[in-house]
Length: 310
Image (tube, rainbow, N blue to C red; front, side, top):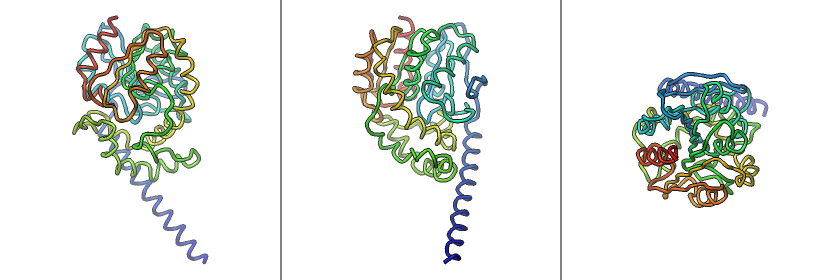
């Protein structure tokens, strides 16, 4: 019997070691294919990677969504806004931004972005948030309102959801085993399910062939991304449960843009309902799904430009 257990333990160790090695190689390849594009700023709790397009136009800070990175904006949307100074940010723990100890809550991320704004000397920029980045933008509007002049939310997560979207189920292992899962089954699982997940996230729009590199999609194939995603999927409802009752206190300009055919988040619950709770919020809907910064850049830019000029 002892021999059986010994063999089982050896087999488990070999499998685990093999998965860890595979994960390390996949992460290294992903970072080589999607290298850092910009500069870094150290802030309390981590180090933020950002791209500054420069110029004399009004400053706009952009925050990507879950499993994303700043190339979600540089893919197509940035080129549509040459008259603005864009600060594209890898949120803490995503892309090439790092965290010191554990993944920060939405509220802590808002503090880190506020520090970035101060460090770069930006004078109350417009803040854009896509998907989960929209939740961070709302946290800033509530707790860091002096730092920004308004928020533009693209397909944002604005309130709690009862059930995770099907594409994210199975990606939230218990916290006690999360790091082990990230370095063993997490990245192989993401690799296997990635094409189907991307198809659902982009639907009904097609996934661009070069999204993995030019759009930064391959950045999800890293243990850090698996851990960050699991944490944010679990933490979002907690944070939003305290944020939603305060939406009526937001006084800055707020605009929300949703794709009518979004198949990841509900445009009515996350868009219409929230717009009705924030004084003066403007809701616009266009054709397309959840990834409209990539699939509908001209329409998204026109909406953003109009809001910024108001």
